[in-house]
Each structure stands twice: as C-alpha cells, then as structure tokens.
Length: 465
Ligand code: MN
Ligand code: MN
Image 1 (cartoon, rainbow, N blue to C red):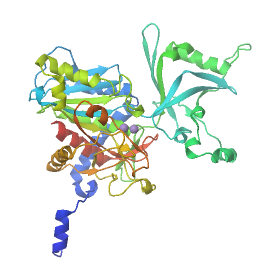
Image 2 (tube, helix red, strand yellow; image 1 turned 90 degrees about the vertical axis):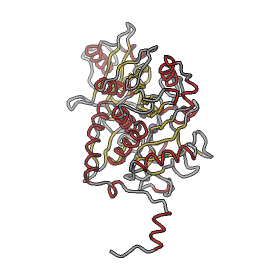
Image 3 (cartoon, protein in one colour; image 1 turned 180 degrees about the horizontal axis):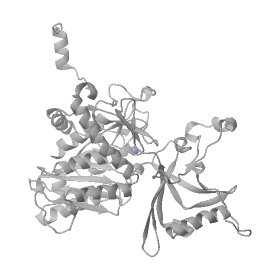
Image 4 (cartoon, rainbow, N blue to C red; image 1 turned 120 degrees about the horizontal axis):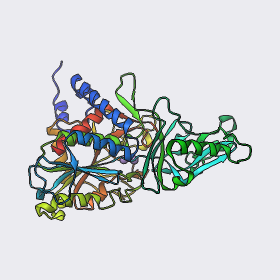
C-alpha cells in the first residue's frame, strides 16, 4: 500500500465524512445488531397499536423489576417505577445516583402510528356486502392502504364498564379485512385524479362480510349476520361501536428484507423503533448517574394533542411526582434536564432523490440520525437544538464509537414535519431529535436497517447510563 499524500492526510483531518455501518462495524458487532433486532421484530408484531405497545412494555418492565409509581413515595437510587397513562401512553423512570435536582435524562418516543380508525357508527350494507366506514389517523398516502390485508385491533368499552379487547387478523387462521380498489380496466377516470386524490377518505371503506343471515323478511341481512357473529363472540351490539377505539392496521408481520437480511420491513417502525431501542437502553442502564425518564407517548401522529399526547401535562406531572417527596422544585429539575426526542427521520430514497438534499439527508445504513431541527418553511414548528447541546451529543456518541449521522426532513420548502421535541423544549428542557432513518415512512411496510436500529439503541444507552 502506498503512503498517504499530505493532501489525503489533511483531508482525513479536516473533512466531515459519514461512516457506513456495515463497512465500519466488525462482523461480530453486525451479528450482535441482527440478534438485537430479533427482539425488536417480536415487539413490532406484539404491539401494533399504542395500547398494545403499552401492554407489551409493562410486561417487559415488570420482568425487569419495575413497579407502578406510588405518588408520595420517596424513591431512592436504583428504584424503578412506571406510570400507565390511560393504557395509551407510558412513562417509566430509573432513579439515578445524583439527586433529582441535577435534572433528569429523558428519552421520548411515540407508540401511535398512522392507520385507519373506525368511525363511531361504522357499519353498513351495500350491494349485499357489509362494510365499515373509517377515518384515517395520521398522515397517510391513502392509495397505499387499498388491497392490502388489514387486521382489526382495539377495544370496545361497554356501558357496564367492561372492556372488550379485539385483535382479529394476526393469527395465521384468522380472517383479514381490506379496502377494495378499481380494476385497471375501468380506472381511466380514477387515473386522471391526482395521486393525493386517487383514493379519497370516504372511499377507505373496509370489506367485512358478504354472507346473508337466513331469513326471508329481515332487511340488511349481511350486516345482520355480521352483528350476530360479533354478538355471539364478543357480546356487543351496533350501539357499542359508539364507545370504541377500533382501528385497522396492516396484518403483515415484520419481515427481514433483502438477500442479505440487512433490513426489516414492517408496519409501525415510526415510532416503535425508537420506543423499543430507548426502552431496552433504559432497562439496561440500571444504575444511571441521573434519573432516567423514558416516555412512550401517544397522539404524536396527529400533533400530540389530547391527554395521552405530549402537548398535555402528563410527563411534567410524573416528574413532579418523583420530585415532591425530595422537596425538589419540578421547574428547576426540568430546566436542568436533557432530552433525546426519539423519532425516525426520512432516509434518502434512491428512487426519489430529488426531495432530499444529499449533504444533509440521512442515509440508510449510516447509523443513528441526530437531527438539529425539523419543521417546515423557515424552520417553523420546530425546537432547534442549540450548538452547545449538539456539541455535547457529538462528544457523547463519538467517545463511545456510536456510528451516527446528521439528518434533515427533506429539501428546504418541499414539505417537512415535526416531533414531540417542541413540547418538551416548551418545559425548559434541552432537546435534540435522535432516531432511525426510515424508507417508505407512514406506509403499511416501512423499512429500516438493522445496524441503524442497533446504533440507535447504543446512542440511547450512552445518554441514559
Ligand atoms: Mn414519528
Ligand atoms: Mn410519523
């Protein structure tokens, strides 16, 4: 090998170059990353809604020594507590060695994902078929949700206070459901619509049955037959849909993608990939310096509004519950606190490179993404991480050999988006967005790189430990 020239050496010293995980990592570390992702795939399959993610997380936390927070308790270093917010969002803490006045380390992800929710009065019959009306939740490209197998998840709350959990379409012998679409032969008019308008919101109707109830007189016999099945199986009537959180999600399981199995395709990487990695990191960081607070939030996909979203006070109240028995002022604790807003970023797609600006877009397989700001137009709707906090995160990641990269959400003025970061920054906390680059975000089959997932776990661990 020839000696490096002065120019080459200088370039090495002065240029910023991103590292590809599969080139930089040892084979043993790549194997470790792939093993880590086996647990992640199980979590994806078990947790297709925020409620299921909260249930799965509580099970994991209970196995790892966490118990429900009892307000008023003076928790001590090493204690582990969680708070279940209405079954749809979860907070948990590991008490650190330093007094809470020094601030807490927060990792905040979300466990809701875009999907098709049922309308309150969803069921109807048309042309001897029974269907459900839906109202989509979160940002979707509606045409992607037709002609894919869908599973029904959620709960029905009955007037007597009982809750019926529903999950149909996940087992191999379960039936599934779907939204139909026109055959190409008769789609000439539809094809003239814009892509955004190709399938309209009121066309996202779910096919749920076609067999008639055997009776000569009753009308809407297919709908009657379906309601009869639901009554026999779950004991609920059409009116019970009025108090239900029922949702259709893709029935497909998480699968390895590529001949080399280097990626995972699944519904709901956004943001279960950050929920899982931050949760595992927080569990593994079992005697942290600072108290760690891990948030699995709800409602992020619609702007974090509502009492299970981070626009509400529930995280602040949880931290206040940790503070009060120590006589600590929650405002001071928050202003000393730091947060990784744990959410995905868009990976540069080689088939659609024009929406990204290469120097600043995140790349699949180049490790965890640190995003200084999101938002749209003139940085609207974002809390930008300060230079000082970015420097601290750079030092933390580099000194632990975590492979990481920068990212932004598309070219200037092309679109944009936001995360929970601004709601946490609003509490006077230092925040930066950290997460996994994703292809086909918000589709029924999003793709991530396994080594990026693992580097994201490692980034959270370094932050929380
Ligand atoms: Mn997200
Ligand atoms: Mn999203």
